[in-house]
Structures are given as structure tokens and as C-alpha cells.
Length: 211
Image (cartoon, rainbow, N blue to C red; front, side, top):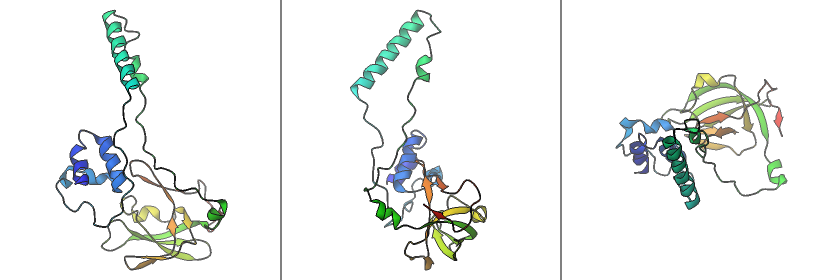
């Protein structure tokens, strides 16, 4: 129901629809109008992000300030002073970006247990019958690892070959669609759901430790 509501309000409240996509952990492509009315937009058991308010509360002081702006603009127009007309728009606050809350605080020893390595993607292919998964062969210096990552809706396999990435190298293996994934790639996720690789900005030795 929420996924369908996001599709239906998208023409009128696009930023709100994108916030809903972010909380449902789906890409903006879901908002295509032809998807409206579909009953399988989200899978049963699919994990969601914590819910957040779609609209922030507008305080009385803000309302009073906006009313005063309108009064000032009306008076300026009536007094034919175009030099002051239109300046209010330039001073409007930008749309607030939604950020995830910080996780529980850890100590340095907890962080020290994690092994981050620079890896180079040697090959990539889609996982059969899994729209979101890519199977990657990643060289981490010591060995080549098979890593399954849910990034298929954001990147094409051919665009990833020879790309350098940051790998969590000592993460316990986990089977995904029958494939043992031997690590995890680090990516940043923007408020609109777009994924960006955490990567070195210059070519770096494969297997280098990230501290």
C-alpha cells in the first residue's frame, strides 16, 4: 500500500515519494507510473529502514515570518519599489536532506577488529533470478574472493570491471541465492537511494590495508 501511495503522489510530491522509496529501500525506478496498482512491489520479509516523518512540523515562528514576508512584498509592490521585489526567494532555505540516525557508539577495539582492504573487481555478472544481486570476483591481494552484492539495479556488470573498491575482508561468509559471499563492498547511499562506491581517488595497490 505504501509503495503504491508513493507512485500515486509522485507527480504532486516528488520529494516525499523519494523519501518513501528511501525508507522502503527501493530505487526511484519503482515510481514509474505503470507500476501503480501492482501488488508485488515489495517482497514479503524484505527489510525496511526505520520510519521517519515525511513532513517536518512548521513552527508558529516560521509561519509568522512567512506572513511578514508576504506583507513586506505586498507593500513593496504597492510602493513600486522593484529593487526589493523578489529578494525573498533567494533567501529561502534549501530543502532539508534526510539523514539516517547514528548507530550505537563503539570503542576503538571494536573498529580495530574489522579488516578493510583495497580490492579490484576482476569480473561481474548478474545472479540468475535475482534482480538486485551481482556476483563479483574481487582480487584483494592475498586471494580472489567471490562477493555477492545487491547493486544490480545501480550498476551494470561491465561498468565494474577493473574498478577499485573497499572490501570488508574478514566478514564471515554468507550464502546468498546458493552462492557463498566472502566479503562486503563499502558504498555510500544518498538520501534519494543512489549508491556511490567508497573507492581510492587514485590507483592504489590491490590488497592495501585501509585504516
